[in-house]
Length: 476
Image (cartoon, rainbow, N blue to C red; front, side, top):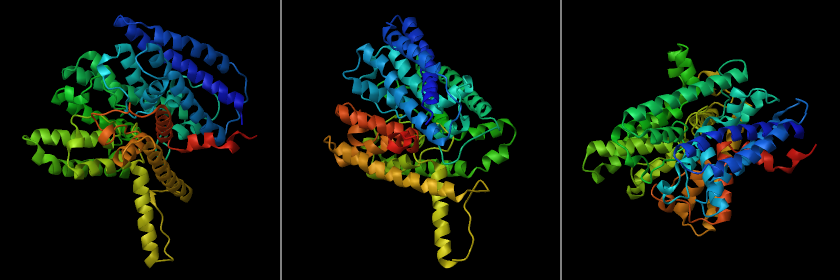
């Protein structure tokens, strides 16, 4: 293990975090609030980061170090990012702070806050901004704007970017990172402008965009998006869906390859899931509403929110019929596309597993037939397929373990299952006590710590954190 290079990379990330903390510091000053929580966090991590970044190390960097350092960086980022919350005095325990910031960085949207609106605007800005930072990936951001990190960049991207297949737009990894973040920033700017035109206050538009385009789900009002007008809700739906799509499709469209983008198998699967889910939920909840338009809006918004793993809400779907709640839970398993800001299993993985199942059935009647599995017309290697099935098995095991652990804290089965599922898929809110009008504050400190780890495991798609916890990883 190249420990010095790993620590040097951690140092660069801490330097970047200190730089990013300047934004909420300025917001606090703008609204005449105390910048103390941010400055007391910023200065120490800047000093530690600078010292670590000056370590001299060889550039030998392989998959084991790559996956381990990604896990290590994300854990360190969540711990240090929690200190502004803790120093603000607005949170009861450090576990609450760690849970809230981890939910932000992993774009989960789960919260322990019962009254969000009482928090200072600087703290709320950092809360939503953390979602935006984590949405596309902190290491991807570093490669895009601070490319001289050292090591093999493609390994880092592979470890942090979600999905079964790596997204690389151009031959050079750094240029791919810059293009992806350019698209991400462009979407952010367009949504801020659209929400402002639709009548949302500028501050709300900025922080809501931070939590929407990254499919994060944090809102600055207790009523979430129900507090805003229909136009704002429609804009949110559009950008939650856009954030759930593979950003490589945007690059194809911008470079004139529209037909190639529209032929994406994963895109079609995602749109099919969104369309079918919306129709089924709408038909089921329609008798509960006086207006067809209102029922349609709530159905489409909640399906888009859950499928994109955002976690926003416009209504209390705990009051919906069990059929609609079941559809929402199933959508939590699907998630968005590879190379997006969405979480969960991903459409690409599910599509490949379905095709593998179909191949197995065909082999029963034609044992000697040679069948390959394709995605977007390209053959997927058997090693990739084996990794996908390993991921799915580990996902199910962790989901069961999470459910068992949460029930030890006194939660009922529905609450425990959707809590565990919401953390692992980065959807955030679930059903019953952790529904859209509830929160996670009733859990004990150890359970919040466990759920924080589950959120990081889900965001990094299991392997980097499991590798980090494996003793053999740290042996020479």
